[in-house]
Amino acid sequence: QVQLVESGGGVVRAGGSLNLSCFASGRFSAINAAGWYRQALGKQREMVATISSDGITNYADFVKGRFTVSRVNVRKPAYLQMNSLKPEDTAVYYCNAVVLGEDYWGKGTLVTVSS
Image 1 (cartoon, helix red, strand yellow):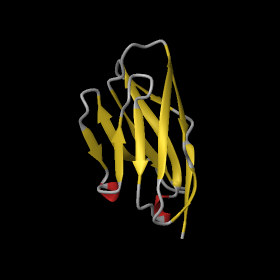
Image 2 (image 1 turned 180 degrees about the vertical axis):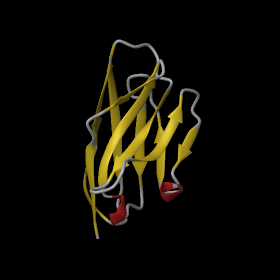
Image 3 (image 1 turned 30 degrees about the vertical axis):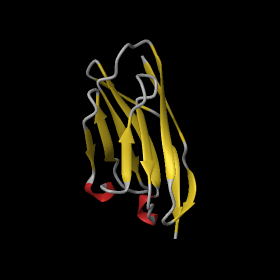
């Protein structure tokens, strides 16, 4: 079992920055891939950014150049630096991790960007 807990959400004005962290606990030795997804009110969950075990990153077009995903170690598998935030970035952000082919999700952290 893998438990993921996100932190770092909050309220920020348009143009501001926030950093999201994901902490992983449980009985595992490696994470194959990790990333961030988001779900705005009334919309489907969508991929924001992912990072593989060897550091290859992938970004949604709508965050390219503004967000940066990184990983610190196996217990901190995904960190998201968000710059130049826009009101349309308002959503619940979820950390995802893939361990032995299974997907695990955190409960999410709310990011609100005011105009």
